Amino acid sequence: MDSETVTQFPTAPPAEALKTGIGIWRAFAVDLPLRVAAETMRFTSRRFQARADHLAALAACASLKDAFELQTAFVTKSMAEYQAEAATLSHEVSEAAALKAA
Image (cartoon, rainbow, N blue to C red):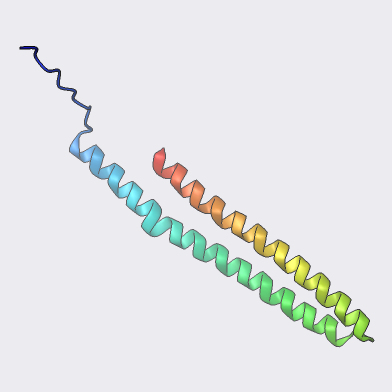
């Protein structure tokens, strides 16, 4: 009979494995939610300020045409900012995953 070869994978010492596990847990359960919450609050603050500025500008419009153009520009810029924010949040998650892998 042929003897079977048993492959053994190297294992980290228990203390090192625990340290790595805690680091991964902290990155995803603590650091990432805090970073996402902080970024979300910054973005929300900027959006509220932009909305307040927009409403003040709308009040100063002299015609319906001016108001329509202002509203169109506001919505277009808002959509671009929401798109950029999605990319920023995606980057935060990717960065947290990269830190976990390191």
